[in-house]
Image (cartoon, rainbow, N blue to C red):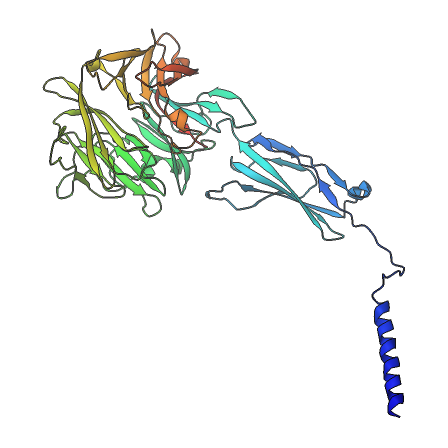
Length: 510
């Protein structure tokens, strides 16, 4: 009985083994296998177009099987979107902009001029599969980037421009009277133009003897609320007459306004406008008479340097502070006094190393001096003092300091001279413009000054000149020179003509 049960158990285990083993062999049953359609989107390349122009993109599609399915309009859904590259939020921006839902993209470019990533997403409504392609879309304007020139045409302020188009476009345009179609009130006695960047957006500020305004930095749009007087909380009297506006510090919302003999500060994030002057020394009871000249590097958080025209002293101005402080005199081996008892003719502060150069004239002797010192948030050091006695230095009209070598340039009439600090009694004739007259001499400070794009341009000497024999509307020229080392002669690399007489300039950066 027991043996029989054993045999039955063996038979059962054997049968189970056969069934299990059969399941391990390849299934040779009858099944139908169907290939799934795959969609391929050919790259439609990077695009560049002008703001408010039409953009048409016609992508090409293929499948791995039968392209006839592409004609089935009910099968496919399309979504075109765009997002700003390296997005900096501006008023009205959304992270992802929907452009269209058709196979081909056909739109008028109404989004703000910027560089975008362009996306196409195609959905197979039968399978749910999604396919994607992307490229770059640059929305630009004829005023995309370049030199903004605040010019004088018979005492009327006019905005002209040397405009450079972005790649793949290569055009350069000389544009004149850019504000004529925007309803900006006429201004007279042009003073200053400045391109500014802050959390609230990018703007261009223009000032004149009888007014000041801010403009949208992309298309120079203006509205009545952009009148600079609406940013001013102080009593400016019957005639609103601002000198200039500047970014203060290296970011955020800080701005400086120079008006009359005062400086005003506002942070557009935390304040409603310009209120109380900051040109008052801590502990003193009255505002000092501030020169409009300021030693303050663009896009730098280091202190600025103001000059008291009555007490003839340099003063330290910290960003956002309500008062200034005197600069302490050196305790040993002073090269000069920070209370020089002279008149300030020019001052600039280097962006890269914070070195300040100040040109002063002694009213008692008529002598001209250049002082150099370095002020940072934590230190103050004197570098040198030189008396200047080169050609016609007593008649100098404009000054500029090269940021790379520190060379001082000054102009008289149609001539530009270069100073060697080792031989300050001599000056080298650097540029002679003949019958033209010089209206501007400058090394421009870019906000993105250390980048490869603008670093070389910031080292170039810029000369604005005009031909008195030409019509006021087109008498102006902007010339750009490289400055060699060893007090070398500047080399002309670019020249642009056809604008008004240049009073001030800035650069629309990208």
